[in-house]
Length: 187
Image 1: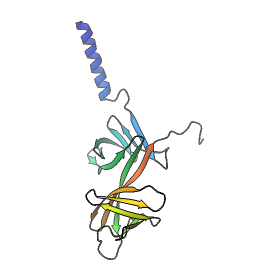
Image 2: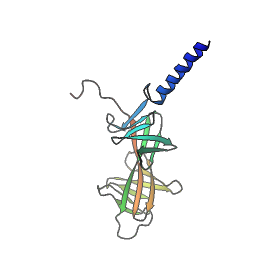
Image 3: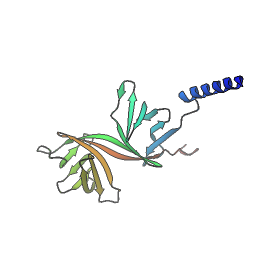
Image 4: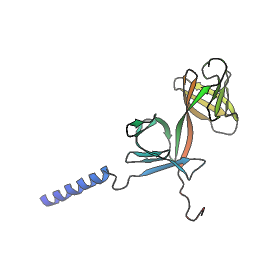
């Protein structure tokens, strides 16, 4: 009996070491933009590692946020919403007010150096990138804006903060599980 318990203790210790160091292989979720389903942009492993934008991080999930750390550097928390086979990743963008007078809340034209823009009117209309139009509503308590597109595009909820002439937006990007390229295709 004593010999059996020693063997069981050794097996348990080896399993603990294997699990601690990911020896059995940690499960990894691979995610891609829905419009580029074969190109992984985010990998999340059970062992606490993530690859995002080509960089490897330690990752922890804290409520609706991913906290990514690379050595001593911690990125701003990344908001996400995970459903069964879909993940919405909110990517942060900063826009500068492009109006002639001081900004009055969201109302006005907001631009980035890359040409991306939002324009919000006082009567609840918006224009995104000079191409997508619709109406919007604001939930100030949640710090969110619901964009209701005129085109047959699903509504989008984005999160925002205002600081003087800067508008920071957490914009939702739908992700799907990465599709693996079929063998023999593309060569």
